[in-house]
Length: 255
Image (cartoon, rainbow, N blue to C red; front, side, top):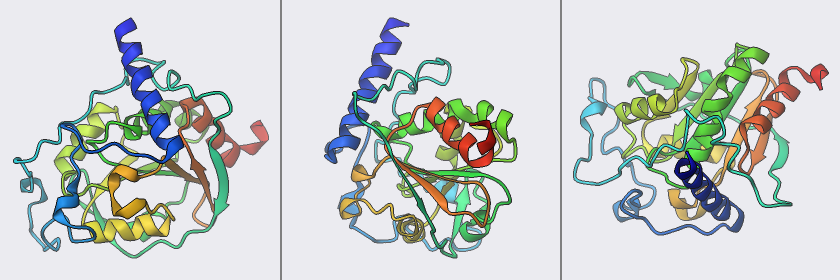
């Protein structure tokens, strides 16, 4: 357990350093940069034609091993990601216009983003990629560990995680990632065409430096209903903090 906690602390501390300073590491064996493929091109290599088998688009020649799981089985995993004194995530309320684009879920089913964001209930959303070894494991662990607590507050919620590395993150890999983080049925993971995903990233004002995923920011978005503005949280949150923000939105009288 001491070794596990040490690993979680090290990963989380490194993630915080990346998020706070704005610097990013070069790609490693576990996290390869796709910049060699060119910025802004259609990364999936096809146009989502009817009948195309996304599962077959495996890129087996590239090594994008999924990073070590930091702890769905350890209740302290996210809490170990303690921020340095004085480091606080930033909060703001914003209205975002959703693009009319279609992505794919972990079962390769089509999902229209604009329609999904009309979900009649609370929505929590973030941007991740499964080979990320810095902030994404922390953000996904926070989502995973908060699921039961959110259900106790309002079981009608929807979680959405959108991959910003669609070339690698096929529906099959999203299924593996969902299993890794014990994702419930109301946690939807999406992939698709790079250009379509980038429209969603732009809509949420979540553009990252040079369109390079290595520079993406720790952003979490919440809204209580389809007509509400989004609460934008910039920075890494613990599961307790995410649950508190959710409670304030959907059940403010509790606070």
